[in-house]
Image (cartoon, rainbow, N blue to C red; front, side, top):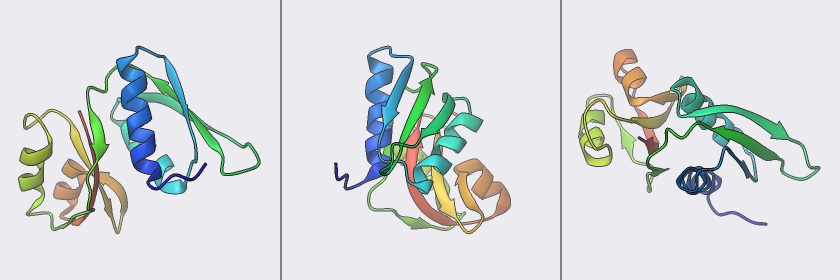
Amino acid sequence: MWVQDPLANVLINIMNSEERGRSECIVTPAPKLVANVLRVLQRHGYIGEFEFIDDGRLGKLRIQLLGRVNKCGVIKPYFSVSYKEIDNYVYQYLPAKDIGILILTTPKGILTHREAISNKIGGRLLAYVY
């Protein structure tokens, strides 16, 4: 199966599975970017453990859900932002100041908006979760 945007596919599957009350979801394909974004979500308590399943093709990811994701999605196009501009996008994509995270890709890896501001690093916006 060909997927245009694997990150969007994973986030939509997570949100749909959360809405239906499932305890896990299985998504395919599993590129490195998706695994790094899932590590950020796991570090902040939105999802539980996830594991890579090698099926001989592109691979699959089994993700344990904790019921903490209300809404998530990708930000298209991937806006390039400096650390001073991040607050403008926080107000645009998140419901309140301290609720949720924006996920950015930076030269130091995949970070949340708070980590990017504290490190004074800009990057490209990938997704939001709350």
